Length: 320
Ligand code: NAP
Picture 1 (tube, rainbow, N blue to C red):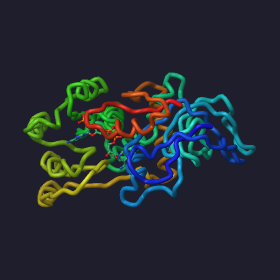
Picture 2: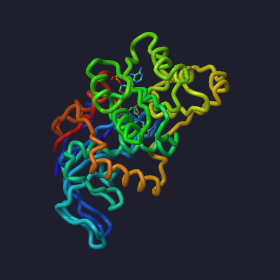
Picture 3: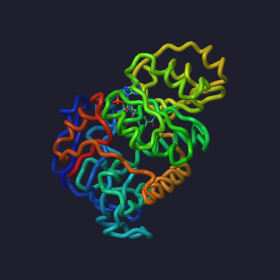
Picture 4: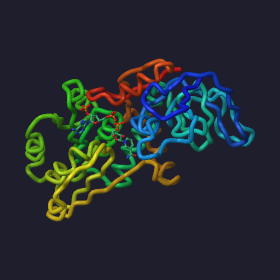
């Protein structure tokens, strides 16, 4: 089969399309023929070995894809070749024509969701769900600022919060991004590049502030979040790309909590709950991943450039 291989850490050019042996499933494993592969910013951090978290070389990148089961191991029950699935994590990487998964890593892909949408589920939607419900304990009637709502995680957070009965304020940096955020269910949409937008946000809440912030770029926004958080509000740091300085007094003044989160730390029980909710959300149509760009598998390097470009919208997927 063909797969993308990384033999040295570096820029997008280290992603090479190669011929590799097709894996075969062990007793508890499932082989998936990928029809679409989700590209996440974390794939670029691992490729360049940011924070020394790069996988052992050589490796096939990627955690997310959707496709059809090709073969199952002898001890696998409940799924069969031909079933449509998406997966979150695999044993062999997702940037490939086929991926080997443990059965617990695959989830049913409802018939109303495309393969590209299935590839857009795992990291973005599981992250948004874990941040919003398991970390911030968001609930109906609360207000939430999705600070960076036009990307993969942001769109997921908007849809999840709206379906849960929260008042949703989303931000984006371009007209097209703001249009998408409004279409995906945000009650109010602001421009995070406009001077004074936090004041507009406060006005939208009658100067009370927001109960929850889902923060995609904390190094730029953490102090602004503290300025607009409501009393006892919760800021969840989902994305961060540098250092920042805050006045911690703003947190004291509001009894505010700043919570870090990494999907990586979700427990097996939490992941089971998250995916049960996501599969049902796909099935009932409240969760509708938005695809920004589809590229052939051979253009994996380009996909890593696109996913890091400011102003790209929705999800970048590769098609084998
Ligand atoms: P993405 O699709 O590239 O989206 C990036 C988002 O950030 C866009 O909505 C973009 O908006 C927005 N943004 C740009 N400048 C901003 C600003 N000044 N203020 C607020 N938002 C701004 O990426 P993603 O997949 O949604 O991931 C978002 C971040 O979360 C990334 O840093 C990623 O690494 C991180 N992440 C963390 C976890 C975790 O477990 N903690 C999991 C998944 C992702 P415009 O382009 O419209 O300006």
